[in-house]
Structures are given as structure tokens and as C-alpha cells.
Amino acid sequence: MDIQSCVEVRNEWDIVSARQLGRNMAKELGFGNVDQARITTAISELARNIYLYAGNGKICIQPIDQLGKKGLKIIALDSGPGIRDIRRVMEDGYTTSGGLGAGLPGVKRLMDEFSIESTVDVGTEINATKWLR
Amino acid sequence: MDSLIVNVLTKNQDVLLKKWLIELEKTDITGHVKFAATPNMLRDTNEEFFRLLLKHISYNDISQDGSIERFFDQLLQTGLPVNYMTQGLQGMRRVILDVLLDDGSIDKEKAIELYNDIDRWLDPILNRVVENSAQIWEKTISIQKSALLELTAPLIPVFQQVSVMPLIGTIDTERAKLIMENLLDGVIKYRSEVVLIDITGVPVVDTMVAHHIIQAADAVRLLGSTCILVGIRPEIAQTIVSLGIDLTAFPTKSTLQKGMERALEITSQEIVRKED
Image (cartoon, rainbow over all chains, first blue to last red; front, side, top):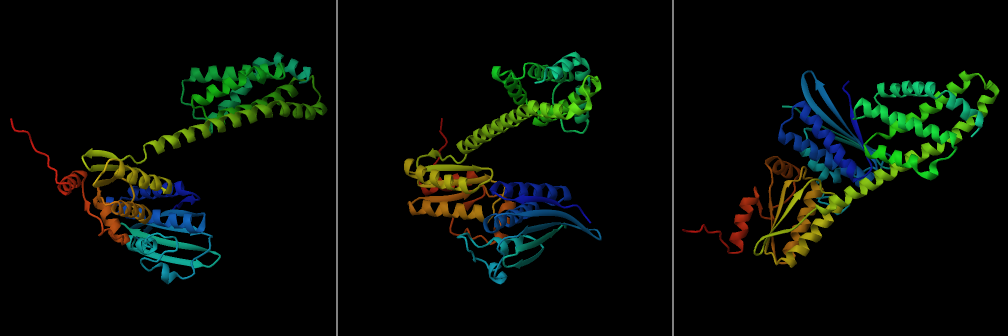
């Protein structure tokens, strides 16, 4: 089991520290410039979702090594209101906050693997992985 | 303060100091105190700290003459961690009790009373340390916040009808608001026909940042001017595409230079080399 690093997300500046943590870990693992930008942007989106919709939660970043296949996993956890209709939030352009509505579908496209689990009134967990090529 | 305690303590000053310094050393080893100064300076500081504490105990209260506050302020300004002071005071408490009990002139029954006395004596100092450092931090943070706001988003007129807004650093909601205001104010003030927004210095462009830039550019368009987005790095271009952000409505250029050329073209201006 690899070590996880976590950042609590409570205000806008925590988004920046989550992002910095992700960028540093991605750099250490040997991700290129473009992938570093993809990972940091994905973290930014996930952390902002936590800040905007759940109020607080955390972003954990974990390096993974599966039979020599290396990668980076982002875990976004919150115990907020949950997502009522996951199918809809994964549609481009759907937003409840007046934003662009590109966040979650965008993260899915930025990363290689993406899964989302949410229970109304319990919370949301999003896992996203990027593999090192 | 009980005169008995004062007498014992003044009598055993040297032992007290030695024990206290050993106690401080311990905190040093655990890495709590990372003091970026020469050993000499640390020793002087320690001795001064000790002298003041002892003075405090024998005169009961010297906070009126402000010497303890001055000392703490000075320490905090040299960047000494607050840990050093709180641990120093806690160490002092342990050492004083040790010395008092070792002295023998005080029986164990009285010890509990002494303990209370010492608590009452040290706690206000401890409170003062925490209060002072909290105040200094708050002040520093508010100064830095206003300093940050000052360099947040200037609109610079470059040529007639052409202005540039260079954006550097993270964009949060507050900054986004300022960007919009400065942009629109500047467009009117400088009668800019073209505004170049340079995002070379923005580390991450996520949907929120993009959204704010799109809104700002839209507002500029409503004023009848054109907004050109410049300084898009290749990796940012890729993430914008992956995120599915639609920037087709805005002219974009890779560098400020190319944006400037386009801006001059739009405003029918030209830079001409002088012929000798």
C-alpha cells in the first residue's frame, strides 16, 4: 500500500495547496509538463467542487504502482449533500452554480480512469487515476 | 508571590539556569525549535529570558514596565518560533518545582500550594506570548493580503487604443472580480479598442478561471472593444480542450507579441523602422 497525502479543503486557498501537492507529486513521479497540467487542473476542479457544493472535504493524492505500471490517483472525499443525478452532472454544460458545467466531464477527459460514487445526504467520493506513460 | 519561593529561587539561581538550559536543549533535539541564529546569540537570548522571568518572580509583576513584552516582541521579530517561548515557559515550570522540592526547606504538603502559585505566576506570561504572536501574525497576513491586492490586475495602456492586462498567479473569486472591474474601468479610461489579456503567469486554467475570463471578455465586447487572449502555453491549450471549454468566440494568440501585432492591425496602426 502506498502512502497517501491529503489536503483538507475548507476555503479557496486550500484548493491552491491541494493543487500544489498534486503538482509536486506528479513531478516526482516523472509526469511530463502536459500531464502535470492535466493532473493539477483535475485536482483544481475536484477541490473547487468540494468547496462550492460540500463546504468541506478532502483531496487525497496517492502514487500507485501496479505490477510496474505507475500512476497517480486522486481521491476527492466529502460528506456534503451528495449528487442526486450522476448521469446529468457528467453531461457537458450542466451546472447548478452558473459555471461552465465542464468540471466533472472535464476531469474524466483529463484523467485515464474515473469513478464517482455519491449518496444523497451522505457524501461523494470521486476517484481519478492518471497512468504514467 | 510567596517570599519563601522567591528566596529559594534566588538562592539557587545558577542551578535553576543550568537545569533550565538542559530542559531547553531537549526541546532543541526534538526539532521543535529551529533557531536560525548563532549559538552565542541563542545563549544570550536564553539568559536574558531567564533573567526576565526571575525578575518577574521576585517583583511579582513587572508587566507594567513592559520589559517582558518588549523582549517577546523582539524575539518574535527575529523570527524565533513561538514554540521556543512556550516550551521555555513550560520547562521553567518543571525546573522551578524540581529546585523547590530539592531545596528541602519546603515540605511535600506545601508543594501543591506552590504548584498553584507558580501556575498563577506563569500563565499570564504564557497568555501574553500567545496573544502577542497571534497579533503579529494577523498583522502580517493582513499586510500581505493588501500587498497582494495591489499587484492583482493592472491594465496598462501600451499604444493608442491598445491596452494589456498581464495576469500572474492564482485567480480566486475576489481577484476575478477585480480583474473584471479594472478591465472595464480601464477600457473606458484609456479608450482602448483592443485589450490583450496575458495568462502566461497563470499556473492553472480550470473551468472557473476560464469562466471568469470568458465573462470579462464578454463584458469588454459589450463595450464595443475587442479582447484577445494571449500567452496560452501548449499544456494549458491541451487542458482547455480536454475540459471542453469553448473559446471559439474569442480571438486567441500564443504570445503577447503576436497579440500585439494583431491589435495594431485592428486599430490600423503600424510600427515603422526609422530610415536614416
